[in-house]
Image (tube, rainbow, N blue to C red; front, top):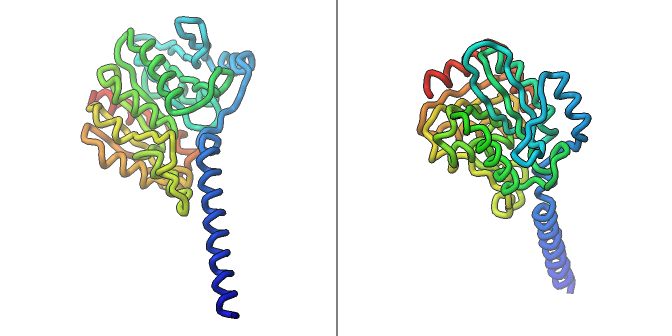
Length: 275
């Protein structure tokens, strides 16, 4: 009798664990976009004032909708153009510091794409909505020739997508804290769950870049716990075109983009030499 009772208890415990595991999988499945995207919502009036203070102005599409922010260099001579696809937190206006960094290295007009559901832009973030917004953005810019791309964290998947889909329109790419694909990163953070297999928005950067053959620069942080640098290294190793990688040992995910003027000049030289 005692043995029979213990057998029933073990079966109940196993059933309970299975139910709890299934509930955890369902929770991650239905909440995954909240775990992937962390938009800040900022009224355009407030963002426009911040932009103005930093030398930016609203960037509009053909319908007059604000799709991001743009900075025009006042320097004489030929200007290069850069399109920035930012990370999963904040909004486009939080990336205005890139303009100062880039213009320590050359004459760059900077365009920062706002994602649907971020800032004051209508819609909701998803792989499809980010790609549609990015396609529109590069279509507006490449009327005047190729552009450079800078992708940051989640946005490295968007930048890789653009390079792969519009290779002739892209002169060079910088990927800051990138990944081979988001599924691998999700599985790293949720090791006991089938995160990679239930992910709906799996940005497959390495796969996208197979159709691009221009220069790709990769910037990795030695102390990155959000997108550990082995995922960026895997992407770098898989790319067959001209490439260069920097590993900043003391940098974290959030401090990685704050490199000095000498580093940005080194990046610009690599882009121009290899494009």
